[in-house]
Amino acid sequence: MSFILICLSILAILHTTHAQNDQQDYLNAHNAARALVDVTNVVWNATMAAYAQNYANQRKVDCNLVTSGGPYGENLATNSGAFTGIAAVNLWVAEKTYYDHPTNTCASGHVCGHYTQVVWQNSIQLGCARVQCTNNGWWFVICSYYPRGNIAGQAPY
Image (cartoon, rainbow, N blue to C red; front, side):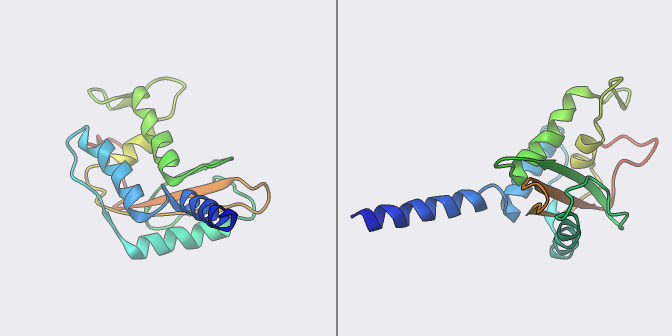
Protein backbone atom coordinates (compact mmCIF):
# COMPACT_ATOMS: atom_id res chain seq x y z
CA MET A 1 0.00 0.00 0.00
CA SER A 2 2.78 2.48 0.81
CA PHE A 3 4.38 1.74 -2.58
CA ILE A 4 1.16 2.80 -4.30
CA LEU A 5 1.03 6.01 -2.27
CA ILE A 6 4.63 6.81 -3.18
CA CYS A 7 3.90 6.22 -6.87
CA LEU A 8 0.80 8.42 -6.72
CA SER A 9 2.79 11.16 -4.97
CA ILE A 10 5.46 11.06 -7.64
CA LEU A 11 2.83 11.25 -10.39
CA ALA A 12 1.20 14.23 -8.66
CA ILE A 13 4.53 16.04 -8.46
CA LEU A 14 5.30 15.35 -12.11
CA HIS A 15 1.83 16.50 -13.14
CA THR A 16 2.19 19.70 -11.12
CA THR A 17 5.51 20.55 -12.74
CA HIS A 18 4.01 20.21 -16.22
CA ALA A 19 0.64 21.77 -15.41
CA GLN A 20 0.20 25.37 -16.53
CA ASN A 21 3.19 25.23 -18.85
CA ASP A 22 2.00 23.49 -21.99
CA GLN A 23 0.96 24.92 -25.33
CA GLN A 24 -2.76 24.98 -24.52
CA ASP A 25 -2.16 26.70 -21.18
CA TYR A 26 -0.29 29.55 -22.88
CA LEU A 27 -2.98 29.84 -25.56
CA ASN A 28 -5.81 29.83 -23.03
CA ALA A 29 -4.21 32.51 -20.86
CA HIS A 30 -3.51 34.76 -23.85
CA ASN A 31 -6.88 34.23 -25.48
CA ALA A 32 -8.79 34.90 -22.26
CA ALA A 33 -7.13 38.34 -22.06
CA ARG A 34 -7.73 38.95 -25.76
CA ALA A 35 -11.42 37.99 -25.48
CA LEU A 36 -11.93 40.70 -22.83
CA VAL A 37 -11.09 43.34 -25.46
CA ASP A 38 -12.73 41.53 -28.41
CA VAL A 39 -9.49 40.57 -30.14
CA THR A 40 -9.28 37.32 -32.11
CA ASN A 41 -7.44 34.37 -30.62
CA VAL A 42 -3.77 33.69 -31.18
CA VAL A 43 -2.74 30.30 -32.54
CA TRP A 44 0.32 28.23 -31.67
CA ASN A 45 3.29 28.33 -34.01
CA ALA A 46 5.74 25.46 -33.53
CA THR A 47 8.58 27.34 -35.26
CA MET A 48 8.18 30.26 -32.87
CA ALA A 49 7.96 27.89 -29.90
CA ALA A 50 11.26 26.33 -30.99
CA TYR A 51 12.76 29.81 -31.31
CA ALA A 52 11.52 30.67 -27.81
CA GLN A 53 12.90 27.40 -26.42
CA ASN A 54 16.28 28.01 -28.03
CA TYR A 55 16.48 31.50 -26.56
CA ALA A 56 15.27 30.33 -23.14
CA ASN A 57 18.03 27.71 -23.17
CA GLN A 58 20.56 30.49 -23.78
CA ARG A 59 19.20 32.51 -20.83
CA LYS A 60 19.03 29.62 -18.37
CA VAL A 61 22.64 30.21 -17.24
CA ASP A 62 21.91 33.73 -15.96
CA CYS A 63 18.11 34.22 -16.01
CA ASN A 64 18.60 37.80 -17.25
CA LEU A 65 15.65 39.58 -18.82
CA VAL A 66 17.43 40.48 -22.03
CA THR A 67 15.41 40.45 -25.25
CA SER A 68 16.58 38.16 -28.01
CA GLY A 69 16.66 40.85 -30.70
CA GLY A 70 14.98 38.36 -33.02
CA PRO A 71 12.23 38.72 -35.60
CA TYR A 72 9.30 38.39 -33.19
CA GLY A 73 7.55 40.47 -30.59
CA GLU A 74 8.55 39.24 -27.18
CA ASN A 75 7.54 39.11 -23.53
CA LEU A 76 9.93 37.86 -20.86
CA ALA A 77 9.47 37.06 -17.18
CA THR A 78 11.44 35.43 -14.41
CA ASN A 79 10.55 34.48 -10.88
CA SER A 80 11.26 31.96 -8.16
CA GLY A 81 9.25 29.15 -6.67
CA ALA A 82 6.67 27.40 -8.80
CA PHE A 83 6.56 30.17 -11.40
CA THR A 84 4.51 28.79 -14.27
CA GLY A 85 3.86 29.91 -17.82
CA ILE A 86 0.35 30.91 -16.82
CA ALA A 87 1.73 32.96 -13.92
CA ALA A 88 3.99 34.80 -16.39
CA VAL A 89 1.10 35.58 -18.73
CA ASN A 90 -1.00 36.71 -15.77
CA LEU A 91 1.84 38.99 -14.69
CA TRP A 92 1.85 40.63 -18.14
CA VAL A 93 -1.95 40.85 -18.28
CA ALA A 94 -2.02 42.51 -14.83
CA GLU A 95 -0.46 45.57 -16.50
CA LYS A 96 -3.91 46.24 -18.01
CA THR A 97 -4.64 48.25 -14.86
CA TYR A 98 -2.15 50.87 -16.03
CA TYR A 99 -3.17 50.98 -19.70
CA ASP A 100 -5.60 53.67 -20.88
CA HIS A 101 -7.04 52.59 -24.22
CA PRO A 102 -8.74 55.90 -25.20
CA THR A 103 -5.40 57.73 -25.02
CA ASN A 104 -3.24 54.67 -25.83
CA THR A 105 -0.97 55.51 -22.91
CA CYS A 106 0.40 53.89 -19.81
CA ALA A 107 0.08 55.47 -16.37
CA SER A 108 3.12 57.47 -15.35
CA GLY A 109 5.74 55.36 -13.62
CA HIS A 110 4.22 52.07 -14.76
CA VAL A 111 4.80 49.55 -17.52
CA CYS A 112 2.07 48.20 -19.77
CA GLY A 113 3.88 47.13 -22.96
CA HIS A 114 3.78 43.46 -21.97
CA TYR A 115 0.00 43.68 -21.70
CA THR A 116 -0.38 45.49 -25.01
CA GLN A 117 1.73 42.81 -26.72
CA VAL A 118 -0.52 40.07 -25.29
CA VAL A 119 -3.62 41.76 -26.75
CA TRP A 120 -2.07 43.24 -29.91
CA GLN A 121 -4.76 42.48 -32.49
CA ASN A 122 -2.39 41.87 -35.41
CA SER A 123 -0.20 39.48 -33.41
CA ILE A 124 -1.99 36.25 -34.25
CA GLN A 125 0.72 33.61 -33.73
CA LEU A 126 2.37 32.60 -30.48
CA GLY A 127 5.22 30.41 -29.28
CA CYS A 128 6.39 30.17 -25.66
CA ALA A 129 8.96 28.34 -23.55
CA ARG A 130 9.99 28.00 -19.91
CA VAL A 131 13.28 26.84 -18.39
CA GLN A 132 14.72 26.63 -14.91
CA CYS A 133 17.80 28.77 -14.49
CA THR A 134 21.00 27.10 -13.36
CA ASN A 135 22.41 30.12 -11.51
CA ASN A 136 19.60 30.63 -9.02
CA GLY A 137 16.89 27.99 -9.57
CA TRP A 138 14.39 30.59 -10.79
CA TRP A 139 12.23 30.15 -13.88
CA PHE A 140 12.61 32.05 -17.16
CA VAL A 141 9.56 32.38 -19.42
CA ILE A 142 9.49 33.76 -22.95
CA CYS A 143 6.60 34.20 -25.34
CA SER A 144 7.20 35.21 -28.95
CA TYR A 145 4.53 36.93 -31.09
CA TYR A 146 4.07 37.30 -34.84
CA PRO A 147 3.76 39.76 -36.24
CA ARG A 148 5.34 41.80 -33.47
CA GLY A 149 3.19 44.35 -31.68
CA ASN A 150 3.79 47.57 -29.79
CA ILE A 151 4.27 49.61 -32.94
CA ALA A 152 4.76 53.29 -32.06
CA GLY A 153 1.69 55.42 -32.72
CA GLN A 154 -0.67 52.43 -33.03
CA ALA A 155 -3.15 51.16 -30.47
CA PRO A 156 -3.17 47.42 -29.74
CA TYR A 157 -6.89 47.04 -30.58
